[in-house]
Length: 103
Image 1 (tube, rainbow, N blue to C red):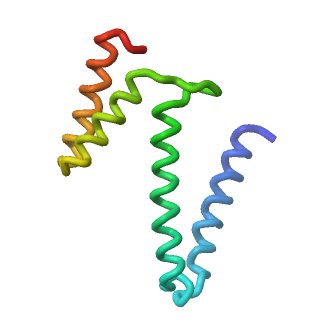
Image 2 (image 1 turned 60 degrees about the vertical axis):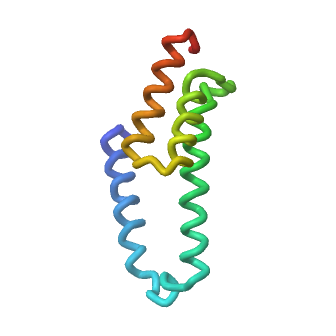
């Protein structure tokens, strides 16, 4: 199979997966248990993505300015800063860390 056929197959599969969501009964989607589980899964997935991007470098553990940026952003979040400010604080911390010689 060529790359275009694989791409078309993946697009079709994604579309059918999304379309199958309309077949789920409304009573199941509105259940408190499903709402609670989906909320917890979202937070867990986001936390794992942030952690992996902050401390992983391929198969190795990386301690560098990304960890400093994550700590600075966490402090900004704890101080209830607006989201844009949290991003700017994290970026500034990473830039200062790299300026100081951290990888």
